[in-house]
Length: 113
Length: 115
Image 1 (tube, one colour):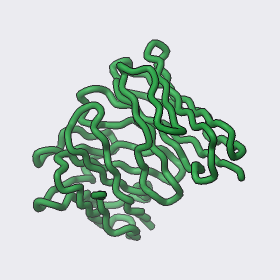
Image 2 (cartoon, chains in turn yellow, brown):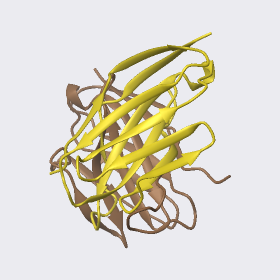
Image 3 (spheres, helix red, strand yellow):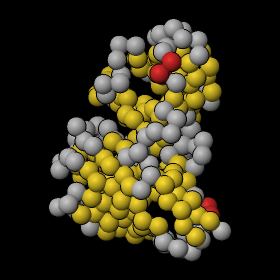
Image 4 (cartoon, chains in turn green, blue):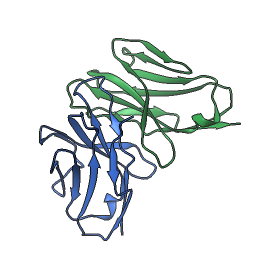
C-alpha cells in the first residue's frame, strides 16, 4: 500500500518568514496530493491540492510543488502569520481507490510573532 | 457553507461496551468515509461507503466495526465491543463524487474515550 513520509515533524518560524514542509510517497500510481490544515481540536481542512499532471500550484501565500520522478511534494507558505500555526498534513491518493487518503504524520508549525 | 456534522462531540464508554457514532454528511454527497486519529498521530482511513455498501476498508476496520446508513441523511459507525486502543478522534467525511480531485469534507469529529 501507499506510504507517505512527512518532514519535519515540528517547524518553528518567525512571523514573515517562509515555511516549507516536505513529503514523499511510495506508490507511483498516486496521482492526487492534498494538504490539510488542522488547528487544535478541530477538523482537518483542505487548504490546497495538486494533481499529478501539474508541477506547481499557488494560492495566495500557499504553494505546492510536485516532483513525480522523485515522488515528493512540498508545501510552501510565504509571509507566515501567527494564524498559520497549526498541524499540517500531506496526503496522497491512488487513482480509483475510492478516496482512501493516506496521510503523513503531520508537521506542527508554530509562527512566532 | 454546508458542513458534515457529527454527534456526539465527546463519548466516554467502558471497555467492552458498544458505541455508535453519528454523522450527517453534506446533503448532495454520495460517498461517505470514516477516519480516525489517535492522539498525536496521523489521520488513518477506516472505511468508505457508497450506494449502501462498503467500497473499501482498512485492516483497522475489523469485525468489531460496522457502518450503516439507516435513513437518507445519517451515516453511523458502530463499535461492538470497545477496546482501550479504540480511544481516538473519529472523523466522518463525505465527498460529492468519487475519484481523484474531488474534495473531501471532514466533520468536526467525535472524541471517543474508552476506560
